Image (cartoon, rainbow, N blue to C red; front, side, top):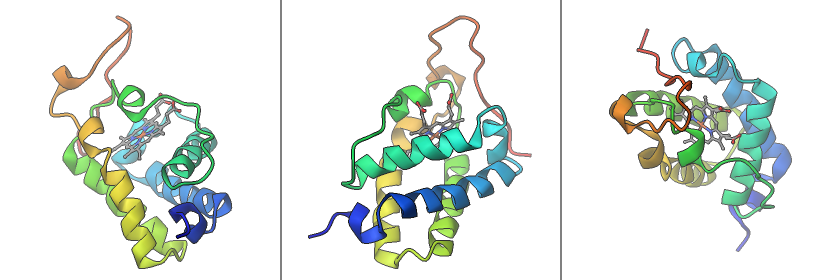
Length: 138
Ligand code: HEM
């Protein structure tokens, strides 16, 4: 059976989804705050490479694992759900089929428990001068 990567249409389609998705993320009045100092093209590229490996495509992602990449980001379940809503909208806009959307979302959901935190004490600072990244819902 073809991998999810191949059924979706490979890297160019994954990149297209990331562009649609991060345009929404950066324009969102809450989730967008978390990304205001991050270059959009860079995060789109990192996320596309990360998803490629997860979907059975080339393993070309060289960044940190999600637990590390989000260790000082305080994201609640409510924020994670906002992100999930934007991701579903983006996958639909990119004309991805419903069963592939379900599989993509399932892979994404697998990271909820390592990313979502209840409080600042769940964040892991490595350097003293690091600031916890947290924004209340506007
Ligand atoms: C509400 C939930 C989330 C928020 C607020 C969030 C926020 C962020 C931010 C601000 C960064 C940039 C960090 C930096 O470069 O210093 C980042 C990076 C990243 N995130 Fe998320 N994220 C969320 C969920 C997810 C999920 C579910 C995944 C996996 C499916 C994911 C995968 C990644 C990856 C792969 C990077 C790149 C890390 C690197 O370049 O080393 N994120 N995220």
